[in-house]
Image (cartoon, rainbow, N blue to C red; front, top):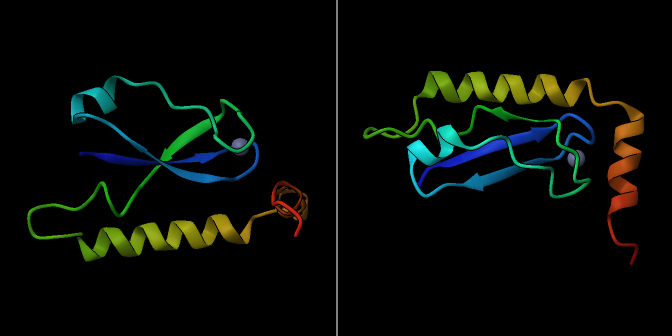
Length: 90
Ligand SMILES: [Zn+2]
C-alpha cells in the first residue's frame, strides 16, 4: 500500500496518507491537515514512498533528511506555539 507524506503549510504538521494503489494516490488531491483542517498541504518526499525493491535509496533518504532539517530550521516561533497549544495540557 503506497504511503505518501504531507506537510501542512498552515501549521507545519506532517502526516502520512495511505492509498489503495499508486493510481489512487496520483489521482487524489492533497488531503486536509488532520490537525488544523487547513487545505494548504503539500506532498513531501517520504522514506516510505521511495522504498524500492532494494530498499530506500540512501541518496534520496539523505536528501529527504536534509530537506526535513531545512524545514525544521525555518520553523517560526509562532508555529511552535501553535503546536504547543494544540497539545492537550496535562
Ligand atoms: Zn495544519
